[in-house]
Length: 243
Ligand SMILES: N[C@@H](CCC(=O)N[C@@H](CS)C(=O)NCC(=O)O)C(=O)O
Image (cartoon, rainbow, N blue to C red; front, top):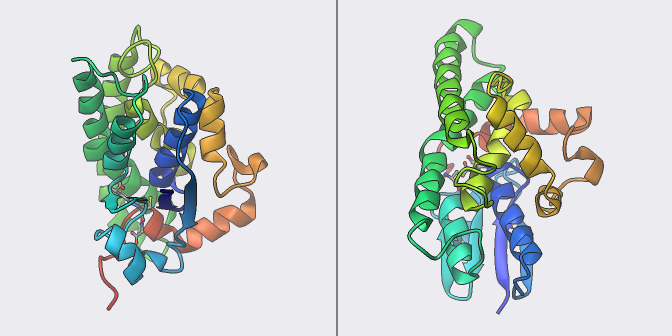
């Protein structure tokens, strides 16, 4: 039975496309899989079909036979268990990975997403109203980068020598630091990790879903405008229902 990934080219979406490519790279024979684009700027996330997979109406969503799944980190964990590989150790050290995976879901995603939203996508909000959230989310993002920098000291990847789903979860948000204007350059272990992760062939392929190869690292002006026009949904600030 084919796997169906319902997704869009955004940080939470790239987590899963990177995962699928890393599994392939690890030699796992995946069943056929189908990538179904959910055009979040056009409101596809509110369709009945997608809501049946993802009641939270945000990409990504996964369908594997009768099993449906929402939440990118739950999907990473599901795929890691379904297709065992070094991306999630089987022994007790898996808890290191799971705690950093949860750390991403509870911290990096929401904070970077909100910072991005206020930085790029709220042109209609007066500057004085944005000042406080911008400061707050930036300070917290910097704190998170200090935590990450400390964790990466003496380690190639978040949980040690091996690349895991915890790295996959963090990478798409942290690599977008210029777009969200969260300066990571003062965190040397983090910047070295970003380069190390970016150099992985499977990461390159995972980032290419939904983009031309020459736009993986630097969006064209057209793409920037397109994302800016619908960007509130990328950064998860839309309200749940439109009915
Ligand atoms: N915690 C969720 C966040 C998902 C999320 O915010 N997805 C965004 C794109 S990155 C989305 O679908 N936004 C559409 C909307 O807010 O309407 C996860 O990790 O899967």
